Image 1 (cartoon, rainbow, N blue to C red):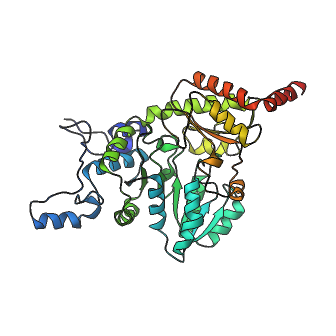
Image 2: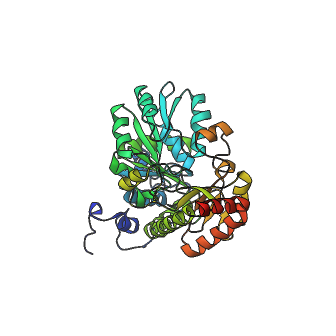
Image 3: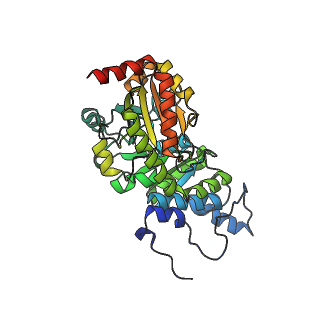
Amino acid sequence: MSERPDPSRTSSRTRAVHGGRAEGPGPVVAPLVQSSTFAFADHDAMLAAFHAKDQGVVYSRYSNPTLMACEERLAAVEGAEASLAFASGMAAITSAVLSFVRAGERVLAQREIYGGSHEFFSHWAPRLGIEVDWFGANDEKELAAGLARRPAVVYLETPTTPTLRCVDLRDAATRARAAGAVSIVDGTFASPMNQRPLDLGIDLVVHSATKYLAGHADLVAGCVCGARDKIKTLWRARKLFGGTLDPHGAFLLERSLRTLAVRMEAHNTNGLEVARFLAGHAAVERVYYPGLPSHPDHETARRQMAGFGGMVTVSVRGDGQAAIRFAESLQLFRLAPSLGGVESLVSIPATSSHYALSAAERERAGVPDNMVRLSLGIEDAEDLIRDLDQALGRAGGRAAATAAAERGSA
């Protein structure tokens, strides 16, 4: 058999299919090793496996052959030296942060982040003696002030949920490193196909792998990718905190990564077409999508993203009840609090991802009650647009008619 191509000379699309372990005679798909523990020929062999630490296969909370195959493919797709898979996105996020900050040290966290992450930094980190400072996406004054306090970790998310703000990752990485901080970014909304934070200088990238990486709404998982030395540190935390992804979940995730590129192409296409449609609809107050020139971070997104993704957020005309009527009137979109699957979903951030935040915290995060988040699947864009149009007609009522009349008189 001829030699395999150098992974560094192949695209992310190719690495998603061929990345990871060396291929050769045997199964085309990495086998599912559904075993909690592993036996050894003798005591010395068992000790050698223990001493191998993250490379040893002893007990599936430590590692597992199926898990390792999944992690090698994750690293290949992200362009990382190594990766670790976790039982959820929040397990990945909390383990990554706690691996690099101690009691008495500081974290500088972006304000516009996933509600679960926000709750961790707001309510749990302080209980562990960790001071948390906040900065708004692209708020230069707050960022500079936070970095001046010498945080151990700078935590970012781009694009953000649900407003899809985009942070200049190269600039943030450079400044975090100058301050002596480890930079961590949640890249869930972009996926490695649309954005490569490590190439821009970020230390660690985390994903809720439940979303685009898995892509089929059939498993819960997370991952962290980065340099091998940092991943080794993180492995020790995962071993003790117990947030390791199970073998079957790893098997499903490794399978899904093979189709990530083609799925993201469909998500990108549908996201842009739907955003353009919604931007011209009378029942829509505002559209949040980095692929539109009207988005405040459009130029940043163009510089660091290969595609703009399948997430589109809108503020409908009216109040929170108008948002609920719109969501409940959709026929192709399922009402569910997740994203990134082949099926289109709809949720209301104020009552789902940001439900745990107070009204004041939601206001500071830019999450009004009339906001609706759409996760565009891989269905036909025209079908999705027809469904959105009829639902907006039912939800908008007099508000839409008034807006249309105002446009006509102008």
